[in-house]
Length: 218
Image (tube, rainbow, N blue to C red; front, side):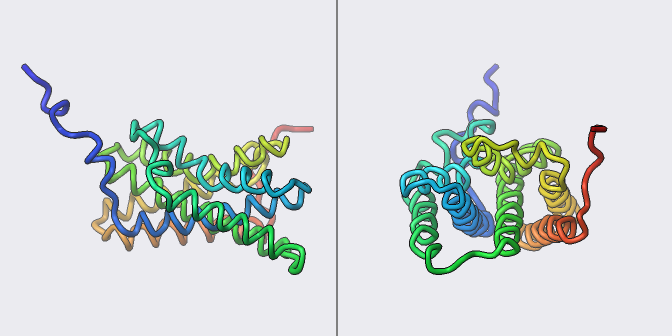
């Protein structure tokens, strides 16, 4: 007997995406690319290094997500919009930074915004692809923190998600809120907004109040 699931075109199921997810994905790509490019400039990298770090920061999490979901080739590599958005943000940061010093609070806010947008986009895509709720939450978290982890590794820094900080936890919280919103009957857009706001609020409040997760004794 043939498997009915094997007869379903998997690529179609994985390719279909709600407009809210597309918008969040592109916005997150620009924000994370800008943040990654600014980190490259602060590390005194050249233009090529700026572009590489922006691309890795913006698209690394989504690439990991798509590989784990079997959505290949990865969505970020199927067209021009995602790489172009990342490179445009990198070039903008490279051209503007010498004339406009970006304050640290703005960098923190950009990073939190990118984290929220990607956590929402990754979770929504996983749910729309029929993934279980727990898997969707994990994939959303990976989407949010994957690019930043690659950025830190390329800069030879301890990744933010491994430090005593509320970072991956914020992405996880936003993903959970989104899934709960869907379960409660919220529209895809409303659930995404709730999840994104929850992630952004937790991340910014934790920075403001210096919240930290329990760490090992020195």
